[in-house]
Image (cartoon, rainbow, N blue to C red; front, side, top):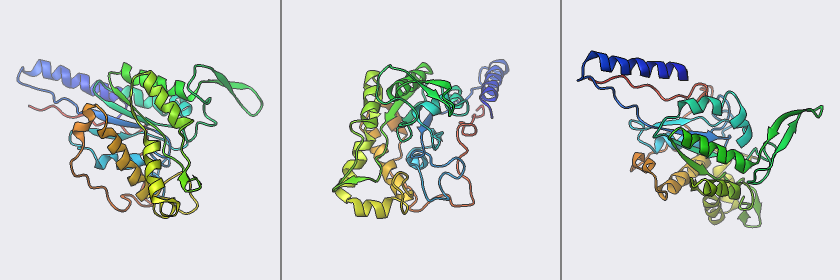
Length: 291
């Protein structure tokens, strides 16, 4: 159903409710939690990472929330940066029209931003050129794009929640490499500048990795020879920490959490099954009137 279809259906049901009888009530559509980000939130473009055994932490969010009261919509897309997700006509442009007052948007970028946006959190601009040196697009900083997401989400009457990127499985000695001086820091700064909620996922995961050690983290949480994309267990580990971080925040979103969540120990999707289709297809359902 397109965003136009959704608005059309809602307008028709509202009109019917008014014209039929005062006793007719239209059920309030439950709020939605939208997830946007790169492959570490939703791996792959069609199979959700199942073929390669790679998964994003967004895959597990549906197991932590009471989906009878809250839509959980994973509209992240592999390979995107804070810039490309925002400027693509098939990604953020498809999500924004679906956001309603009372919704929530979790956002996590950074893994693809070294070539997708300017470094830092400033207001400087640059240019993106093609192979012939022709300017094809103006480019802003990572922080600028994050602040723009926050502003657009708030303009829709929804709540933005910024989440720092997960650390890669790269180590220096017995400590995993963090992003405390780049993308994790810039995400936090952007959130602070806009007074938005923030979950320091990068540091939270890194703290746990350091305790577990490189050998165990590599064996348990990542496919062979992979440093960026976790396996099912690794993604579930990260998802649990996202929820832990959420519980520390002052937000009504916490009331939708399940007290005893049950995340499957093994992948809930395997080839040749396909995963979620992404922003063009992931849309909250429209609930029918109740009498």
